[in-house]
Image 1: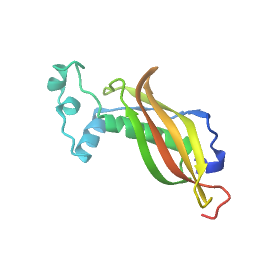
Image 2: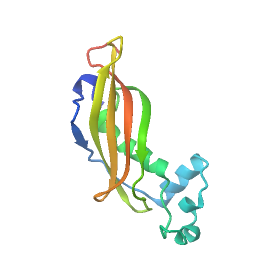
Image 3: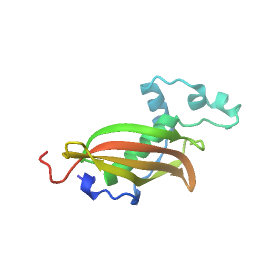
Image 4: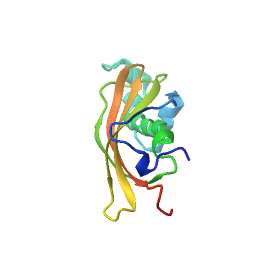
Length: 150
């Protein structure tokens, strides 16, 4: 386990995640297939070439999911009970096949559950291609406490 327990999260702390991922055509195709999203902007190079983007745009939900995945080793790997919500999702810039995504997480809030057995942690997750912000959202999780029997 590399994730943090509730007590280890500090509001205002930021984690620049070391893991990165270059998005392949296969990644985008498989995600669209699995989610039954056949939007031609994601899958049809000729169609996408005629749009304002000029090329295929990676499925935004894949971008968001990948950002979560990149953040997990530093945040919730093995210490999460559940994801409670994703809020304020933004995609300010497109992601294209061949782009390399990196992520950064900032803890924005934390509180114990009413029974004091666990904690609720809210994190602001940002995904970048180079220095350009391509996705941002708030992720709220139910976290284990280190001193509670699991």
